[in-house]
Image 1 (cartoon, each protein chain N blue to C red):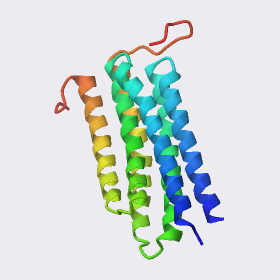
Image 2: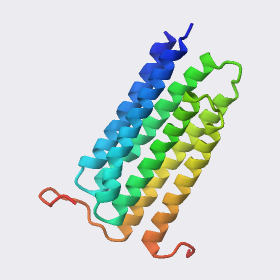
Image 3: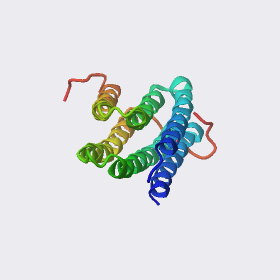
Length: 95
Length: 107
């Protein structure tokens, strides 16, 4: 049988390690020369946040966090696409 | 046995996420940085969520439908993350950002 304490510790350690990778990416989001580096770093941070939300949902045993993770994935994707289009053409709504 | 499978999936995923983050820090140029993160992040996220899916299947076996939600999350990330990387790279190339060559300074 599985011990729940063991998996709680594993989830906590994995979440903390992912938080450390987010801190590494924040350096590039703050310092990175040029706006494209900043947008790429923010996209990477958003992708890691999805995993962090699912881990939090298992750690606190709240299944509603998976819905928030799905919503955050869609928002991150649309936001990056809109930023890419705006930086390329200087306008969001043009063809 | 189950603990071994879950921990191996989670460790591999965290390893790939770390490799992506280090690539984002250390590569000299925008295109190479996206090359590092676009692939490593997709695989790392998918591996971590796959490990959690196995954990859910064995430990919370009374609610198996949540696994479908996690599978949709993996599928969506596999489609959306390379697409976002491609769109960013194409936008940067069209605005005239030059790729890094050997001997240039890091930027």
